[in-house]
Amino acid sequence: MSFAQARWIGDLERLLPIRSQFVVSGNIRDSFLVNLDSGPALVPLLRALWACLSRQGFQCLLVFDPADGLRTYPNEAANRELAERLFDLKLSAGSQIMSLESLGNLIKTMTSQREARCALVLDFASRLARAPDHLSEGEHRFFVACEKLSLYAAAMVPKDGKGLPLFNPLLWLVNRPQDLPSWYALDSERVASLVIARPDYEMREAAARQLAPLFAGYGEASEAARAQFLKSFSESTEAMTLTGLADITELASRSGLGIRAIDDAVRCYKVGALDNPWKKDYLREKVRGAQALIEERVKGQRAAVVKTLDILKRSVMGLTGAQARSGSNRPRGVLFFAGPTGVGKTELAKTLTQLVFGDERAYLRFDMSEFAEEHTSARLLGAPPGYIGFDAGGELTNAVREKPFSVILFDEIEKAHPRILDKFLQILEDGRLTDGRGDTAYFSEAIIVFTSNLGIYVEDSQGRRVQNVRPGDPYGTVEVRVREAIGDYFKFRLSRPEILNRIGDNIVVFNFITPEVAVQIFDGMLKNVAQRLLDEFRLTLTVSADMRAELLKRCTTDLSNGGRGIGNYLESVLINPLSRALFEETLAGKRELAITGIVETDRVISLAVAAT
Image (cartoon, rainbow, N blue to C red; front, side, top):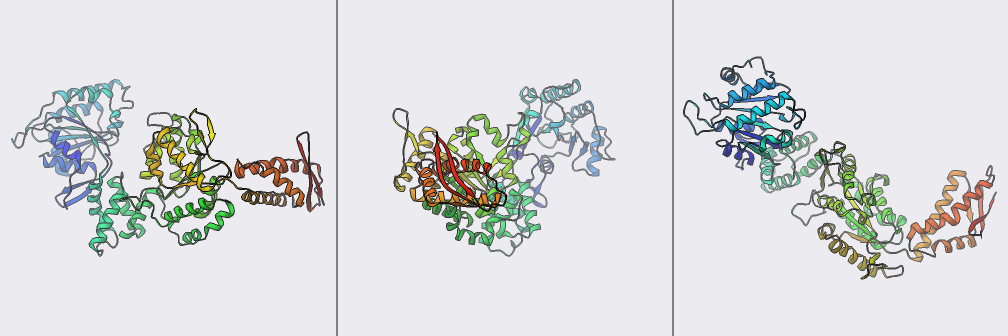
């Protein structure tokens, strides 16, 4: 199998004649695909490094780390004997613990060694100094000595005269370059920085080809099925390490997942759950008959409900983003609920959660008015590394890792700071976010719901806020004007058309509450009040026809605030005076509570009630 070696290996081979030290950072704890004598293999960094150095004629590789001290790599008898002879060491009993002073002397001897080509790796070099910019006297002396060696070391040819002049290099393995004193690499042109990137598509594909025979059914599969497996495996693991690919392979083997279930194996690795609610047989049946259930809770919004169900059905069938070359990492579904206040946008999000996950409380809600300032992005994603609280992670990323199968509601999205909205580009396109700790949260199994009141009010040419659509406008007019206003907001006011492009045609416009629907909402709320009285006091509520008509008139005169406004009026004209009346009644032994009239005196509403 042919493949291009990792870039950092080529850079190391190219720089060995002109650089004496290397600061190696980035993806250093990954596995790497290299060609060994036995063929291609996924190996750790030290094995890949030794394969590179041995091709250049190196005979001795020493490894030091602050925990275990000094050892040879590979830790074999011949290597130990050579290192003991060249450097006067005692490694036969295992690793040798060394002070920084002794380590400095070893580095000095190693860089000038001419009998054999040698290299020294300082593993976990991020832990050599407790505080890189506040060194102790011994630490400062050690780093200054290493800096001096980097400048004055010379490239040499071994005594046997074989090969070109190369340095005997010192390699620092660090989590990040700033783990060394800030002046160290800056003041020496002989210190090279090698940043190991995460594997690209070609490298992941080569690794997938190497791991493929370990998947059940690969050996018997057709060429087309094998090609599709490799494509899916490589695309769905974007931004992952090769160690991650190896772990997915192990997980698939233990779970009995074959090549046709590669997407399930990757998903299981990302979200940490094998059980997938999206693939349950009962879900299709629930969604198939869901329209009546949803319209019972969200009244008067048939067009919005139908479009929402279309998007949900697409999500259940796994066809979200099917038109793209790679869409498996995107969220299961994206919905942008727009329309007047109080018409059922949040209620529909709860109903979706109940429908898919069996519990409407399974949704994650974020009130975006709390994120109006740019610095509040730290709450969502966690503070950047180095800032107070960065190790706590973010509210959003932590919640998604805990509940990867969920509906995530971002309420009143237009109130968030534009810089925070930029974070949604990555969620909607790649289905992932990385927090301040460096941990990645995956959104590929979630439904993202945005709600917004955009388009109901707009600014006129004088900058005044005017109503764009009104109760009584035909739904077609409301939909067109709201969509246009949303487009103008993202394209011209925010100058972020790319966010609108990611949302696509998933904008669901809700209509105003009509008088006919208002009656249904009112009756439903009155029924809820009666049920609460029955549950709390074992009282059956009866309301006379005239009383009901009066309450209905008061609660539905102004429908500009939708169903929530109806509920607020009902609270003022019924629930508050009813609570006052119940305080004055003796309820013991009573079974029925009748409301026969309503009296308003000096703007104080009272009810005529009789408990029997």
